[in-house]
Length: 87
Image 1 (cartoon, rainbow, N blue to C red):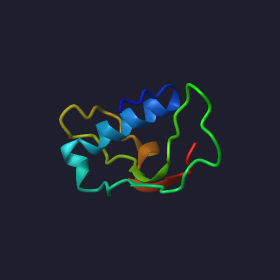
Image 2 (cartoon, one colour; image 1 turned 90 degrees about the vertical axis):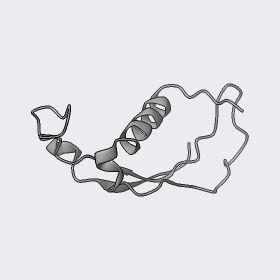
Image 3 (cartoon, one colour; image 1 turned 180 degrees about the horizontal axis):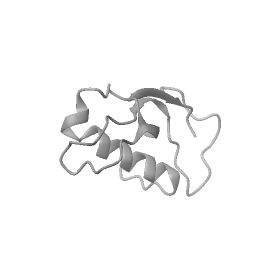
Image 4 (tube, rainbow, N blue to C red; image 1 turned 135 degrees about the horizontal axis):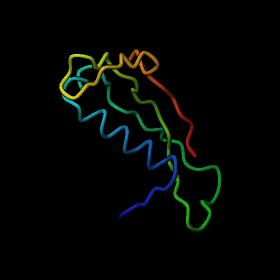
C-alpha cells in the first residue's frame, strides 16, 4: 500500500530518513518507536493517520565532517529523543 504524505508530515519523514541514513550520525540515533494507538475516530477522506511515536533528532557538530559546512549548528544539538502524538 502506498501512502502519500503532504506538508509537515512529508518534510518530517524525509528529514528522519536522511538523518538516520547518515553514517556518522547513525550510532547516536536510537530506533524509532511508533505508537500502537489507533486513531480516535474515522480518518477523513483524503487524509492518512500518522501514528506518531518516539524518535531521535538533532545533530553532531558538523564542522570537520565531509560536506558539513562552517556552522556549528548549535541550535540542532545535542541529538535527543522526541515524542510526538499521532495526528
